[in-house]
Amino acid sequence: MRIGEKIIESGLTVCALSSVLIILLIFFFIITNGLPIILKEGLTNFIFGNEWNPDFNIYGAFPLIVASFVVTVLSLIIALPFGIGCSILIAEVAPVWVRNILRPAIDMLAGIPSILYGLFGLVIIVPLIMAYLGGPGQSVLACGLVLSVMILPTIISISEDSMRSVPRELREGSLAIGATKWQMITGIVVPAAMSGIVTSIVLAMGRAIGETMAVIMVCGGVAKIPSSLLSPVYPITAVIASEWGYASGDHQAALFAIGIVLLIFIMILNLIILISKRYSISGNKV
Amino acid sequence: MPATRRYTINTIGISFLWLCGILTVIVLLLIAGYILFNGLGAINWDFLTQPPKDNEKAGGIYPTIVATLYITIIALVVATPLSVGGAVYMAEYAKDNYIAKLVRFGADSLAGIPSIMFGLFGYLLFVYTLGLKFSLISGSLAVAFMVLPIILRVSEEAIKVVPETYKHGSLALGSTKWQTIWKVVLPTALPGIVTGVILGMGRIVGETAVFLLTTGGVAKVPTSLLDPVRPMTVHAYLLASENLSLKNAFGTGATLLLIVLAITLTSNYITRRYMAKMGGKL
Image (cartoon, rainbow over all chains, first blue to last red; front, side):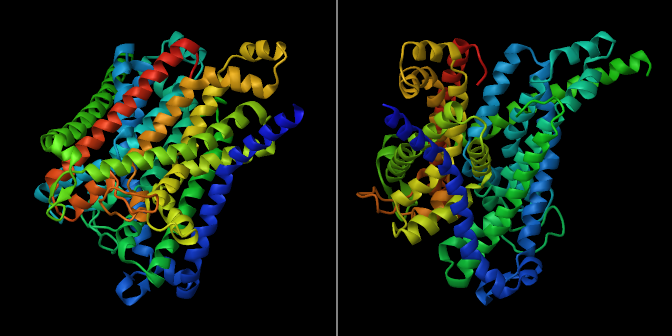
């Protein structure tokens, strides 16, 4: 009997460790396949090279890295006020019946497949930008708009969780000394929930920078550093997905190499979350 | 600050919050409504049961529905035991030891890895190294790894909220730890675990990038695990991006959306009933 228990426990440990194994395998495979081309091109040439031209075997990833970054930041700028506003509304202001509409609505927003966001962006947002703002339509702005909707649920649900776990006493104390509801929110609830809000922003950044299908349909696919919000761009994920079908040899290796860049970004974001959890003010885990 | 100004700011602030909420709902209705409005017209019995024809410019999407179904089943069969096993370990065996910390960091990191990376990884490990070709099985295994942390996290929470008294009762009757877990803990946590699996299902059905890189993209009903397939999401992408048939792209999109909405509503329903029963937070 004891032996049986031991065997089961080790089996479960193996199951638990499988996610660690998978993440190690992902790093191992992508790095070993992408690193050779980076070394061949030279690290600085690869990262800061201004030209991405697979036809001539030139792999400078700088325009792609800039594109991913710009698009992510823009989506955050658009989504942040609405996301935080919505989470405060759900956590602090809205009556129960409104909550019961908003929460499922946000779950659904999170559940819509990314390809459908892309389709919507391609057929609605791109023509609108083209008609009213000019340019090719497929642009930084289109990516930012589509991504901002996609990251909204991440920001809302995690910020809301952390606001709800702010102790009741803090709120009541603030109201009791005559603060208005808005003063209570901005003075007490938001600061106390800050670590959770930061976590939600960082997670949303990860979502945005890693998103592929929505971006690929509205980015335009031009590997140049964008000069305005209306310029077409070519973020890392879009490059990988759209060139995958015909890439081979050095070209394919270069796709793994920009994959490494993406992985590094994501791991930096993960570390930020880890650190922000440690400095949590209200002590709640998100 | 004068009192009137405080109240004005309060009113403006609260109104802004309401605006955010209303806007969110409008955006959802706009996107879902637009996809359904343009797609529902294309959906009929033939669309769902016939293969594409005229070089995919017309016809139905039957092979892609089959592909999505097979991939979902295979991926869940692989991912569920691993993640529920891991969840049991984390909730019942790990005592905040270094293994638990390692697994927590691993699972959190895995959850943050963009899906396209699972595509690259799936290609390198399954398609290339293990020689499984661009196929049903390669795509299914790659996406199984992608949903593993989701099912793990939700199941772990569900197992953690099983009341200690249940376990004590079972242990007091002389059952072993595993008997307690198998006969008491897991059945009690089952609705939560099912919610996790359903969430994973939603992610698999809606995933595109992984399949674009690993399944080969042939819109035929597969006859073996090593056959190339094209799931619905990839089909919608190819139809739209290669300008083959926007009507059928929206038809595929609307079918997808209906499936995903049904999945979301089901998991919400189970969660709510379960929360009411356990009186806890999931």
